[in-house]
Length: 164
Image (tube, rainbow, N blue to C red; front, side):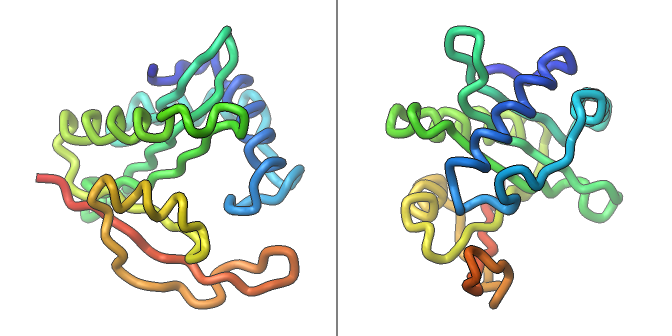
């Protein structure tokens, strides 16, 4: 586990592109995301400056195989809240990487004295929901027809965990 550095921006982009080609549970469709290496570097640098945002990654043989991206609020009224996005390459799933990423993100958030972790998940993504509930995330609401995936409307749960 490590917090990504700007020099690892290309690894991050490669991971996102692969994840989006492997799963229909993510926001972006394959090839839809438009992020240059310079944009990714700038984003990682700004996260390091903000203090309430980071990208935690898992490396295997020089390859980034999983991430949890933590996006902190930008205003004084919500800078205590962090939106989470997680992904692990298909061939590495089932090895506990997602759990390790959550452990690391929660520890980081507590050290930063942040108060709220939140995420969105498609209501039929039962495996992910089980993981989030294992980490005490609660369903706070449902966004009806939030996404259109393969021609079908999909609802999303809003889930959150309040930190001590």
